[in-house]
Length: 301
Ligand code: AMP
Image (cartoon, rainbow, N blue to C red; front, side, top):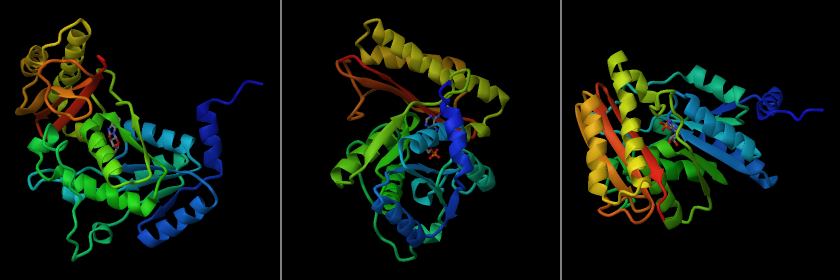
């Protein structure tokens, strides 16, 4: 008899699973402690909703690699700057829960802002150093908001494994630093960047692009891939690689600005001069209403 495909076993699991939805910290904590006390592993995917195929990939792994899976849907106000899109961030809770349900997620945690941020709250988690570069430079306070909400969610969910996307590479490294420094007993899993057919990294914010911007946006990844090719062909001058990436982006995209485009150490995220160790090529481009980020890792050591 042929073996069941991953998809089939996924669907099979769905038949015995109805996703539970909770907005209550105590209820979720109690539920998860009960599961944990039975020796079950908890897989967790933090999201801001508006779920798409990249989220689905993370969720699928969390479901298949753990006994119990949790997805949080929470648009976190503290990680948005005053001129950013917090108030207009896309979302469709019914579609999101339907996706979680069909992926056999066990629990969706969907708290309100008031539930997670008490009126008299005055605590923030600050990860320094690694946040002084890349997005940390142009989005002041962003990673403080991210580290704060992620540590709160980790304390509530107490997951064994957390699934994060490579697309938000700096976010992964910041959370990794925080997990080490604050002794969270959690394994972080980096999932590959999910892309559209033309290479654009899938993002909830891609819907902000009009047709022309959407076509142009594919050049961000094309530029990063060209930079990777140069390094794999032996180029070691990060300046030459950064210039080529910038040239491709500015030559093909009517961007309002390039926040950064260049070569960074894969772990410290410091800008690199000579390429001697593993690096990440990364860019953040403002195009129309969207700010698009992308990256690719190059192993050279
Ligand atoms: P968000 O809802 O945008 O905060 O993203 C939730 C999680 O999904 C984060 O770990 C992101 O890195 C991940 N994610 C978002 N877009 C992608 C993508 N295109 N590929 C892989 N992971 C992604």
